[in-house]
Length: 147
Image (cartoon, rainbow, N blue to C red; front, top):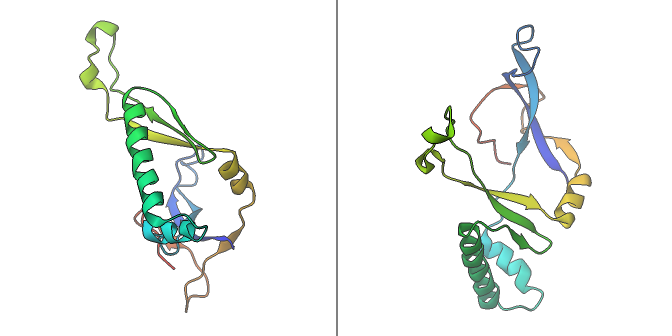
């Protein structure tokens, strides 16, 4: 199996943008979404009942939310770690800063060892839609074509 990609023209944001306003970049082309129910079915093939897998998953999400809200980082086994990323609007001095300037935090996920190793083994394959021989598409929305 391989990750499919297509080529798109986009605005060049690099140091050479004055001389080269556009460049060609790779963009992932995703296949079908693996639903939670399908993933549950795959896990239950190992003999664990669906209701138990759902129960553990729901409880883990609840616990992760609770610990993140308390300012903690959360390790989720081999899957990886979760933490909040916080940013704010800048001010000139400390006296002008107020916590209302802090943006809504982002949940940051850092993959564990197993997922980091999986990234090293990925193979890429150019996606060519049926009936198209080749070519580069102009920049589109962030939503890539599905297979």
